[in-house]
Image (tube, rainbow, N blue to C red; front, side):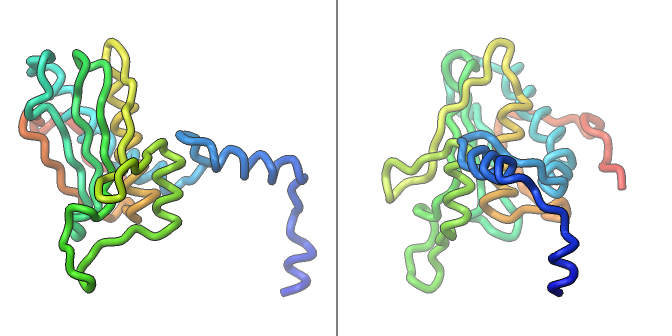
Length: 186
């Protein structure tokens, strides 16, 4: 064990400090092949639903113009985003467990690492009885990929979703044609 440690390449102190700084900046994630694979696997389905909602309008209202993505096996592990401001912004929420079962044994509680992951993605919890929230600028035309990456990144980083994780998507205004996204390549 000591021999392997002695042979391990060392990183300059500056690289280690940079990794800590970047890891603590909201919206900046360090390279993670598993995370990238998870996002790549599910991104098209989210982007195409966001595009469908945008195209179906009306953009003057937010009613039913949202998408919620959750881990199929955990109803309290979800992220949802809703268009507003003529589709130039999205109000996004990540589950805190506040709206789930209230019994002590069944209550969903995020670990400190999960909370930290949400903070790195820019989510804050202003009300301890509410979800983590953030406003996402998506521009004109809307950057659907920005929203999809945020949602999927939160599911991976804070709720433990992985490539093999089954997701459920609820988006009442979205129409996703069966051939909208190619099947995942293995």
